Image: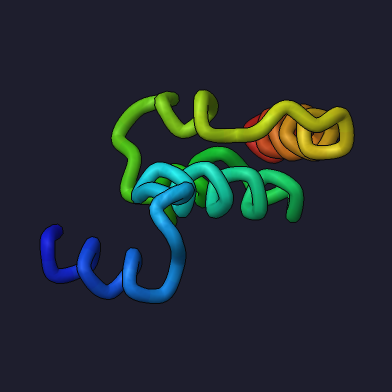
Length: 76
């Protein structure tokens, strides 16, 4: 982790942290409408904790809901 932090902060100022990447990544993947199991796999989450990283945005929230509905329809 320290190897990454040194390089990360060398590129950016200290206004950002490691969770900025997780939040941005989760928000981006959700905005694509990817199913939640794909988001969990790509972010290496083993729980629903990824949801706290998704920034509140009506468009992103709508994409998440649509992806969940599509996943449920596939299971039926």
